[in-house]
Length: 110
Image (tube, rainbow, N blue to C red; front, side, top):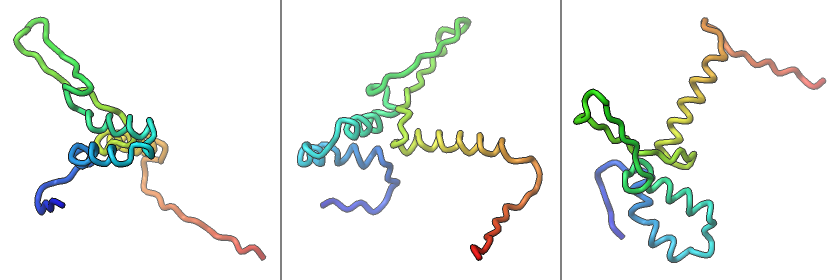
């Protein structure tokens, strides 16, 4: 077993390092949906995996930008964060734009 003491771990990196070994020993227990979501996470933002969009200015054809595609999976730590942030922003629009308190009253059953 390899021990790593420094660096930042991501779900994607953990899968990249261990998925093949795990999948080969547990193949009968892995559903298609689970394997597909792991594949999407491992290929998220990888130009060779999910591809990329190319943007170029017609007036400056030498200025080209490549933007890698995302998997948009709730399972992905990067894409799920984007979805959560969008949900929080949507919920914040429902609340009044003023100071308020949330109070809960419990009424006895008697």
